[in-house]
Image 1 (cartoon, rainbow, N blue to C red):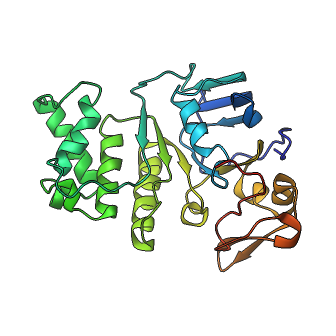
Image 2: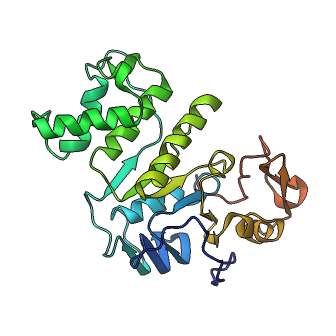
Length: 293
């Protein structure tokens, strides 16, 4: 689809898992906060079992897309179906991995306690888990290889270890759809790779659908079936090689942008004189003039 929201029909990736019912379907969906249009007439269908990377600069509406899927931000117009029905708050079939944010060093919460909140976190306080629920927690800890520090206070763990526990918390309910909001932020390269492999491996092995918000597409290139890029109300969606091109990106930014492929990595470079933005790191997406913070 091009930056003005008109559909084109990319071929489905060979690795996609065919399902009668898609994981999500946006149909001419517009999201706005007051007079500010976040994105307009977004149309996109994601089959179950696919890995969708959501890309774009700060303030472009990436997290807002997750909020729409969670039923927290209603559309201004158009429609959105999630797992066969309208978005609803507290959908147990959806898991959520937030951005990494450190815990206070003295928080009296162990790793397994954090994961246990994924079982009964809708209740106030810390309820006593049943034997079956405790087994689910242990299984989730094992799935993310977090058993060695399951009884360590979470504030004493590294950022990567804490993020593993957040993934276990999101997966302990055996969701069909996993939403990940910048899960690689503030992590070093080693943990970025480990976290991406955990999430991508879950999608591959369990047939779950992933929506992965990120600034840098390179860590997820080996897993993403398709991408959606949002910027200044415009969007483009489709296979990575169809969306991340110089022509499409220049249209989205309304300025000259070059997309290069260097040693298996995608590098996005803008012409500062014509585009009106600066690029700190070439593989991160530029901030356009007028971007909302």
